[in-house]
Length: 84
Image 1 (cartoon, one colour):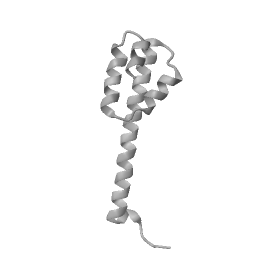
Image 2 (cartoon, helix red, strand yellow):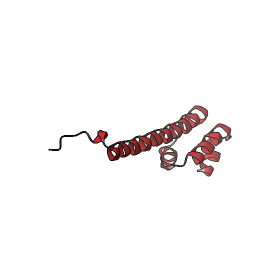
Image 3 (cartoon, helix red, strand yellow):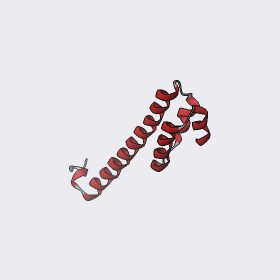
Image 4 (cartoon, one colour):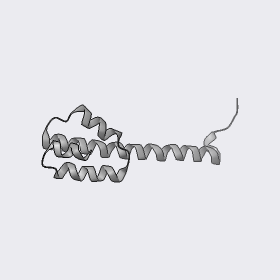
């Protein structure tokens, strides 16, 4: 067995940092998706699984930001669905 800590190497730290950054990005996207869903639930009540799944499928931060704005502005859930 090798007797060293991978984190003591440059490669080990780089791999760790890449995974950490990817995890943070995924967490931010997930939080944005959940904020959209919560805004829709607060405004319109129940939100279908189909709509929730479509929101979870989105992975572009700018697209999610715009969708959040629309969740706040749309007059009804059907109008929002058309933007998905």
